[in-house]
Length: 76
Image 1 (spheres, rainbow, N blue to C red):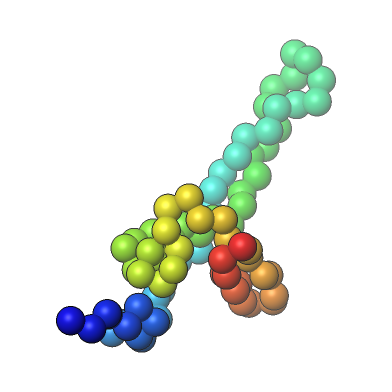
Image 2 (cartoon, rainbow, N blue to C red):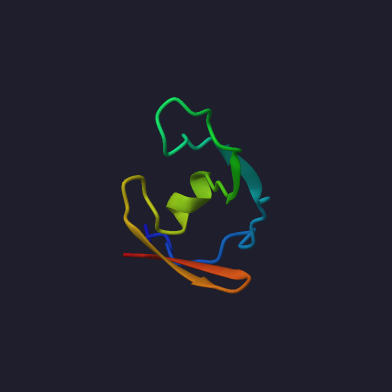
């Protein structure tokens, strides 16, 4: 039996996710003062079997190249 072509394109090579907000409270720099106003950060979660199929098994270190409007994820 022939080996499967592990580099074959998937039926759905494009994925979509939504950038959400993560709120973090920050303590005041001085003792006894109330907490500062919370700060909001963009937050993105990607998960699925498709990550492993694309060559990113659990525990794999990745490199993320950041460009304006674009993230490129490659294995480290």
